[in-house]
Amino acid sequence: MRVGAFVLAAQFPGQGQWEPLNRAVRTAETVEEHGLDSVWLAEHHFVPYGVCPSAVTLAAMLLGRTRRIGVGTAVSVLPNAHPVALGEQSALLHLTSGGRFTLGVGRGGPWVDLEVLGGGLDAYENGFPESLDLLLRWLREPRVGADGERYRFREVEVVPRCEEPLAHAHANPSPPAQGAADEPPPRRPTVLVACTSPASVRLAARRCLPMLLGMHCGDEEKAETVAMWRREARDAGHAREEIEQAASLHVSAGVAQVGDSTTEAVESLTKSMPGWFSEGLGAHRTVDGRERTMRDPLGYTELLCRLHPVGTPQLCADRLAATRERTGIDRFALLVEGTGDLASTERNVQRLGEEVLSLLPAGQ
Image (tube, rainbow, N blue to C red; front, side):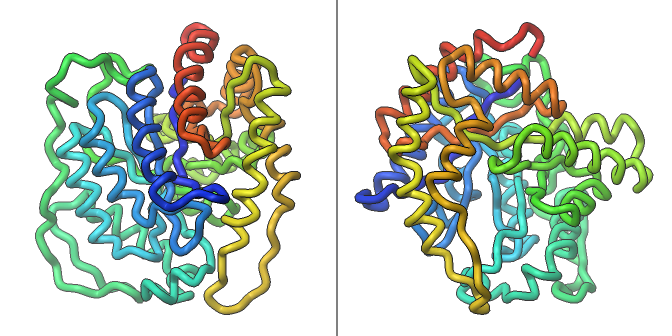
């Protein structure tokens, strides 16, 4: 079982924008110090929900500040980026980090980002499959041209190209990432797809790409989603070995808060997260003026506390093991900054690494 931290660089009420960015960097360094597997970075524009506008840029910085952990995007919003540019950046990070970079991509939302950054509403509503396929070709082929609805260009050389196996992940004596001993680095960066609908599950499955499943989902819904993904992958003609390899890379997003008691852990989040949700999610503006609804901030926080490892070390370990048993997913990206406080976040990561991981069932 591989447990990592999910970092949004969340700007809590009363904070400036430097504070969440500093907390994001310190979280990654603390993840490395205390034995967790990875850090996963979100990106947002124009809202305090998260003040990182480029997950791949922050990933580059954190890969340079660490030596052992994996760093992934959760996610890079594909309608806001040119897939070739994102492919070039991903190949660069893969090669220079010794295979520690993972690219998670998603469709994002119908936000004003599409207007400002030039993608337009059509990129969100219709363009994601074309962009994803072009990105995958760029990471897999030596030369690429395009003649699609959105992207058209003559064939060009792919540089840098991820064609040679990486002999060594790092030239340093640090221990390998949790659960990754003796595993060779991947030949090219793993690409995950954020799946929030049957259509996105089918899209990922037909390409046999692993999924990133959101923190709003419980185990039952995630299990059903994984089962659907497997059916769709089989129906698309993928071999059993290919399906199993991709399925081993699914990631379950959630929230984690370790406390001396479950009441303490829950209260620390219900005091802080509703204000962040209210200001952060409430700041989203749609690109076309469509109406949108927002979850009740307190109710959503309480739901997350019920679904995920929020409580004593033993409860946290039990919930992680239960999710693994029910869904088959054994990679986790857990939001650890739910209090909005740097010292509390660092302590939370430390307790996850020192007190929770040791309680997970043997062999997981």
